[in-house]
Amino acid sequence: MNLLLLDQYSDPGGAQQALAELLPAICERGWRAVVGLPGSGELCAVVRALGLELERIDCASDLRRYAARVPRLAAQIRKLAQRVGADLVYLNGPRLAPAAALAGLCCPVMFHSHSWLPAGMARAATALALRRMDARVVANCDFVASQWRRLVRADRIETIYNGVAGPVGTPLRRPDGPPRIGCIGRMSPEKGQREFVAAAAGIHDSLPECRFVICGEALFGNPEARRYAAEVRSAASGLPAEFRGWVPDIYGALAELDLLLVPSVGPEATTRVILEAFAAGVPVIAFRSGGISEVVEDGVTGVLVRSVEEMAREAVALLRGGPERRAAMARAARAEWQRRFTRGKFHARLLGVMEEWAFRGSGLRQFQNSSSEPRA
Image (cartoon, rainbow, N blue to C red):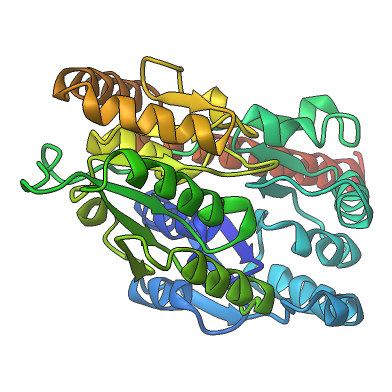
């Protein structure tokens, strides 16, 4: 099977990490994959290391320039699909959909929906493009899928939860010392680092021995994200907080934590870091936002809260309550990861849907070809 895989970014966000981990599984199946990426981020190096074909595409990160470049991107996608003889075009981001629709592709298209788009022009344009292409939509949680249900045919939408590899061997034990509480994710308002700092201040008032770790960077060349990161650093002044930047070894970072806070605000998806914490055996306290409640069972695999104040109170209660409750929660979370969220389960389902959708296109082409043959 010949695949054309397109991503709207090459910097290492959650969607890009999912694609980077999918590529070896595609290679193992013996499928040919050509990957189209903008820029020169870390995902480009992953593609080259696997020996796959890498093509540059013109998907501008600046929305003001994007609209003007859609025709050029459409021409690139059309040319690549024809050269590859694509049985399936996979779109890993909504900015690719309008250009792919304009390209007039003759093969099936799959759109992987990783996040919530605010109601407005961007969502409407993406939905119109998906309908025009009769694209298959794979969402990473029911919450993300819900934004498409009135805009795209219901039988074209499927939820497939992300999966993560987990640490090699058994989860690492954190070294002795003061309690360490972390927040891991791209620096952006919806990821809630500012709320984490506010919760950390409340925890520090009750447990001054606690230490706080913030892992993440402003990505995708976003100046607003860079300003936000500076604000978070300023707000953390006076707290025993360490900023680690982007951390490539997520399980090494988790191994140093007693507790992970996930203060995502607004319409968040499920967030990979929760699944990674499950696999690593690190207790999670998270906001009830977006699709998070689809993966965290309150009081069993983690704790769900509605405010910064409640997050701080629950963190203090967990740390003061002794290790038994945290250990039981970590065991339950790790069992849930093994049952639902391993990378193997994720790839098996996603690749199965990709193959099914590509076969549909192959069947249609065979039908069209046979219909056009002269009859005896």
